Length: 208
Image 1 (cartoon, rainbow, N blue to C red):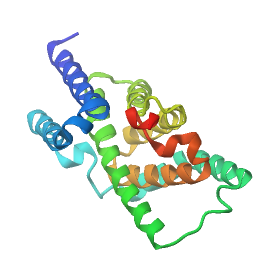
Image 2: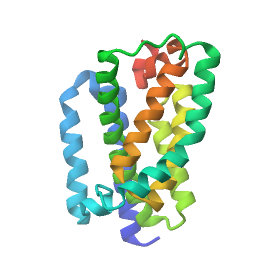
Image 3: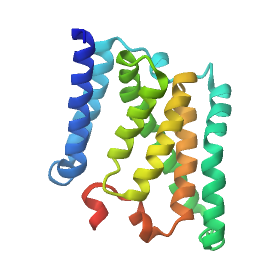
Image 4: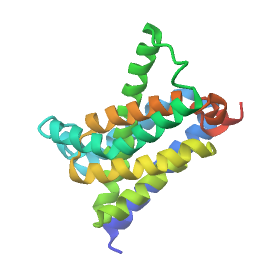
């Protein structure tokens, strides 16, 4: 393996380790480290001379990206709606202003997650892995592992992460990816019993 490729893999490993350290330890002992970690991500883009368009922050392909994301997300929508209606979770859901606001906050959080997952991790993986299916599979494993030890979330983030990672290889658009990530996540949270998903908690919070 060439030195530039090895350097990229080492960078990915370091960033992944820092994020896991924050999830499992630092968010409780040093919560302020979230901002330095974000600055580290931004610094890597400067180092690699990434552009906003290359990362996926663009509008020229928004419509085709939305269409492709809708197609990739359709099986998840159908499955979760069926489960939610069958289990009664959807029939008892009450829509009100606070739910809409929290939903909007979650979609914004999903857009940020897609920036980290696709705009950083997958963008870097694509620099060393040519095969889009392989890079998408590894990216999905990264995403699922960041939701350990929640088995329900790991299953859906693994499958959903793979589907959306494939979409990114064809139509890289962080906004479109984040919107559908958010919609599927909201449907997941309201289709299954909260005790089953532990309120969507990961890391040490899963046990609390």
